[in-house]
Amino acid sequence: MSEWDELTIGELPLIIGDGNYSSKYPSAKEFKVAGIPFISNKDIKNGRILSEDLRYISPEKHAELKKGHIKEHDILVSTRANIGDIAYVDASFEDANINAQLVFLRCDEKKLHSKFLYHLLSSKHYHSIFQNHASGSAQMQLPISALRDIPISFPEYDEQKAIAGVLSSLDDKIDLLHRQNKTLEAMAATLFRQWFVEQAQEDWEEVALEDVTRRITDGAHASPSTVEVGLPMASVKDMYQWGINTASCRQISQENFNELVRTDCRPLKNDILIAKDGSYLKHVFVAEDDMDVVILSSIAILRPNKKYHPLLLATFLKLDSTREGLANIVTGAVIPRIVLKDFRKYKLLLPPKQLQDQALTSIQPIYEKCWENDRQIRTLENLRDTLLPKLMSGEIRVNH
Figure 1 (cartoon, rainbow, N blue to C red):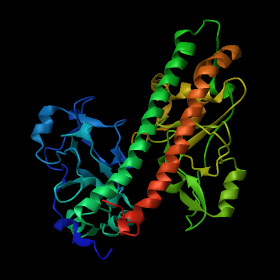
Figure 2 (cartoon, helix red, strand yellow):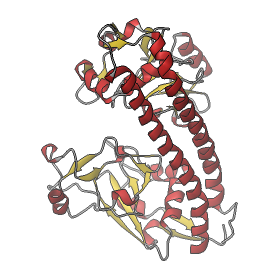
Figure 3 (cartoon, rainbow, N blue to C red):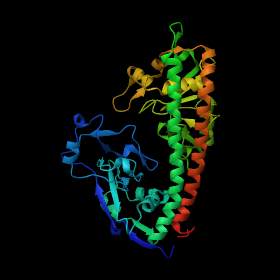
Figure 4 (cartoon, one colour):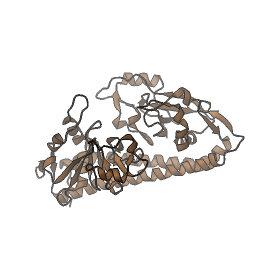
């Protein structure tokens, strides 16, 4: 580490720019279904900009806004709410726009490697530093002046590039597996629609969700106290498309964990878990095995009976048409949530068991491949997260 230089972020060869908060900030009616992405801190996760819930503005409005125009290779930092969340801007978001919850860092690429800085700032160490530099009474935020004062240790440029290469190669493998799963999931949905929507028969029985499940419930409504070292308790924010990120979960005591297990808040093999609150049905997955986690009420569990196979029922719940159909049983203006008593009555067609079995010969291998990919993703992420602090501290040096 002694060979590394140290400067504050404000002294580094980069530009710091913030997002839009002036009188020209887009009004609700100025947001469009397509156009120029207008990115907030809710749109960044795991180092990437998520496209699912993006808002858009017109090119004319974009030109009117003089701040917050981002470029490929910029690094986004969340300075409000989820303080310290980081994202790297790829080519698909060239000249998009950011709001006042974000700032961008734009490196002089001849002197400071942007991918190196991105990985450095993504570390748990710097996430804690960002949090510690935040201030505010009503709402914590990280002012640009405080961001500028944060010290950064870095090696000479060639070593920056070599370190970024090691970590980016892992990121590329992870990204490839994510994209494979997205493609596979779309294939499963297409097959489901072919078997059970386009070829649905008039004599199929119409049933309610409660007719094809043994139990539909949500997790704990009372939230136990957090402990430093304990067992994971998940809320909807900890969900992703194939499971629960236990690393981001709050920890609770063994006693409280056991009590929530006793009250059936632990997902079991073949349970279907859904995001109940917030972006409802944003995440729907089947538990591959019994899970060593308990859940809060923002997540719901469906425990299928033998009438409808869990993988097929989960695929049905993932369809856009299902989400649209559930709009009438969602309540809450600020935080939409599914009302379970109405959800249990939601109607669907029940395909014959023989037809389900035939469809599963094509659909089940897709899910099994997705689970395998997800396990690889977790392994690669653990390797990256183990290497990251060692590379960034100089404990491990790379040849260049």
